[in-house]
Image (cartoon, rainbow over all chains, first blue to last red; front, side):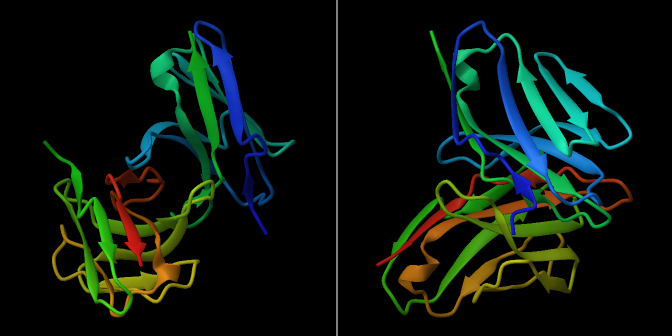
Length: 111
Length: 114
């Protein structure tokens, strides 16, 4: 049973536009959420995170929104750049430090 | 520069061979983790350690074993490789502390067992 779901396996966005990546979770005990970016043949790189006490966290072009009632979070990238093309993983953790990952969304930013 | 390293990056090996995947970090982190990932799938935790001489199995059952004799070193061993072990193996580390969730990953080892 997948506790963290990324239902869109891929997303294609034009350069300069907004990319929105979505993530749903089922476990109400999760209280911390993270986004990782992964290029082929490399390990995931931590991008941005949010605690359940907040509903928004922003870092430069990246903003994560958390809707606890809907058990949904999203990552907004604006403006999107070709270098953002990668696989994005959503992850969640609860009272332990173990991370539960989604299956990833492949973002392609085209000129 | 503080970092986390994995060797080899790629390994193709025959069935029945013993292999050790190396992971080292220079960040002084107490916690270390091994994940297994297949293409298009999520990362699955197979082992973790909270410090020297501490090792635990993760959520995904694995035939591999790990050791933690030094803080900076967390190798993973497969005594007898099989084609079902073909996967990408990712090592990660994090600080020890309440509310610390971010894990930092190495570049991974792509293992192919023929």
